[in-house]
Image (tube, rainbow, N blue to C red; front, side, top):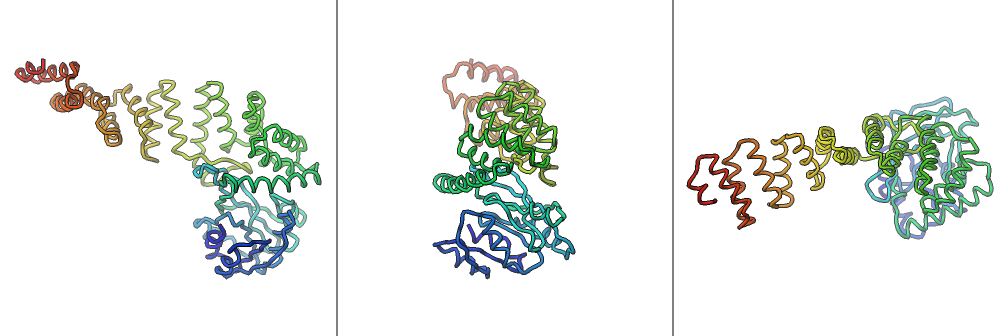
Length: 430
């Protein structure tokens, strides 16, 4: 994954430092092809030690730390250029990280201090999920936020690749918790490792320990409450999960994770109204969170079209046809319509007697699935409602070709010929 990482930072970097901790493949050749300075260090199950070794070789005023499975987004380059100014005092920036999930489509959102002034006192700490904030606080570094975004692909690994990474991290995290049993962050990260492996009881134990230590700032505490609530939900302990969700929302309303958890809880209780309420809030906050980021440390990003589709489907369940229609129309502006969505959309339009739009939707369904009799019949029926009898005749004549001998179709054709004064033809079809 290294080449794409280095390609993403090449336009902005005055110096690229790569620390090799024992690769045995073509890593070094890739690094050198981007004119990177390559240094070597023995791996010691300590990510902070490796990162700190790498930044010893940084000679410029600013450091951007990036992992091989990350990419600096193209839109972030101009933003980054504007930030690289001379600073008299230490400064650290919190950047946004979009973590691709295993499904290869959806993301979780997090933030991390990855951009900072090159002061030797600013270093990483923690054997894994390492941070610079403890050292930055000691030198009174100013913390700032920015719109720089890194795309992260490491959480999208599956199969053996995922298992190896999880086992490596578990080993380090167990040592970290044993060495620092009073560290909320150590318990939090070990809890997450257990949760990824679906070891939910163990995850609960460490999330609870992290919460009870009360060491997190509000943004991080809200994230902890969400992951803890998600674990309890998976364990079937719904009331406890709801309590934590509410605590998270009491800390910060501008987020997706707690509202999405609330949506899932409501569905599990068959509370469609509550599920709709949570999804509407996510939709209302969509643009704000996408443009400015979430106000909690770790959040989720939900595809807007997925929200709109789910809203439409839920509105159909409760027969709120106008709201369903609006949701599906908004969805179709974002994405192409699939057969189930178009069918539900047609169903809502039919209840609202929006016949012209309903005809357009039936036309799309015919293009996708062909001349299925139920669609042809629906088209003919709507044309009759609209008083377009000649057009309806042609539709039902086609229906007769698809279903020859259908007495109901013949009756409709005869009736339509009668309505249009074509009595000889009507008699032929009686």
